[in-house]
Amino acid sequence: MSIRKRLIISHAAMIITPILVLVVIMGLLHIVFTGNSSSGFGTWGDTDSDTQMELFTQLKKTVSLHEEKLFDESYLHRINEQLDKEETYLVIRKGNHLIYSSKEVETMTLDELPSFGSEESRPVVIRNGEDHFSVLHYDFYFQDGIKGSIFLLNHAPSFVTYARVFFPIFILSLILILFITNATLSYFMSKKILRPVNQLSSASDKISRGDFDFTIKPQGNDELNRLLRTFDHMRLQLKESIELRDQYERNRRELVANISHDLKTPITSIMGYVEGIQDGVADTPEKQKQYLDTIHSKTNYINQLIEELALFSKLDVNRETFHFEKVNITAFIEDYQREIEDDMDEKGINLNLNGHTTSNVLIDRNKMIRVIQNIIYNSVKYIEKTPGEISVSLTDKEKMVEVCINDNGTGVPEEDLKNIFNRFYRVDASRSSDGSGLGLAIASQIIHAHKGNIWAENRNSGGLRICFTLQKVEDEERG
View 1 (cartoon, rainbow, N blue to C red):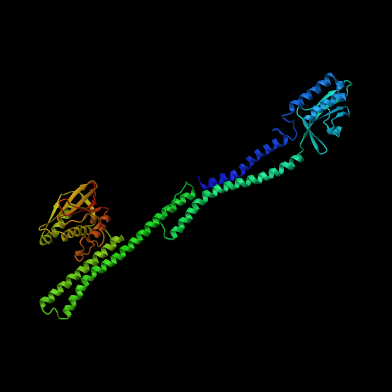
View 2 (view 1 turned 120 degrees about the horizontal axis):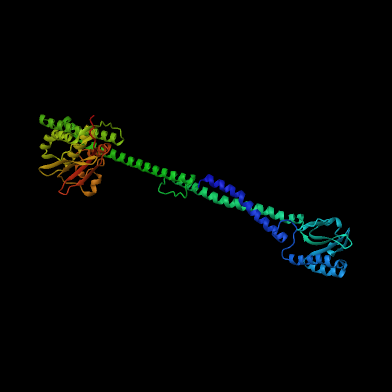
């Protein structure tokens, strides 16, 4: 439920609940003060009404059968004693005179009593000074034709007396109910609202201190809990970005360290040979040529390292431009095989193409040549057998073409297979001066830019297999 709906319901409950409770309290107070659950301020008590009504009925019979008893003091005194037990009093009126009044109401006047002919089925309330009475009366005619009335009076609490006690209780109850209702609803509403707010505050404090290793647990689907989920998602993204930033920083430091290491050796060598020429150590044309050839070789190595580093940096930040075109992969590899065939022969390597496919793929020619070249010449470095064997196989895989380059070299320890595509990673540290250490990392970046995958595995027969996939592109239909 949304916070808006909760607030609306809460405010409605703050109004409705006190009203309902006050209605119940008023009903209970009415019962307490009046002695029953009937409405009005003056009524006959439920517990004694049977006795009172029996005496009232007896008096009615006396009027009809023995009218003279209404003037008999002893008879009326007995009736009055029975009524007195019920806290009820008797008054008899004849014409404009009261011929009998109980002692408790002897001050009652004719004007205070209901007039002849106003008899009702329910009692009425009259006032005698400060006292209020509930009156039940019966009108009749004496035998001499004079109007007569019999009155039974029962004490009824006055409105003022009732109000003096009831209103303070009413006001106090109203204040208490309002306080309890508002306090209870405010507590539950604040708990629902403050819990996520406190979670946000605690999470913000932890993030400000660089602590991202915590979880936020929303408990609902209202606006604040949705904010908690969004905040927790932001925390995860921020954590990932910081971890990525730290990883980039570590990579940068490692890159600088590796570049410094890889450049230091050839530069030191170049400086040594230059000093040898300057100092006259190379005192014959043959030695000078040897020194210059070495300097030229080291310079080419540095130039190659810088070019590969520049290419890798552009690939790493997606700044390198690709020019994709549809190419038959079999013909493409056959062309490259013919280009390096002589070089492979000089190195004692047999290069073969196994498997053909008619599928076309979408590639950047120059970048794909760099991939195949880096993988093949990486294999050449680790082939110690004579003759060396390198084979390229092509396999159709639904929407992809799988290219695998196999060698019969020393292979790679299983624990190192996942690392060989990392920058500057070398399985054999003793060969640190043999290549830049960026070849397979560049190949991986280029394959990923082609939306393919690349992986390495050891062959059962010995040696290493490096495979990558390329997306097929279908021939356009001719009209």
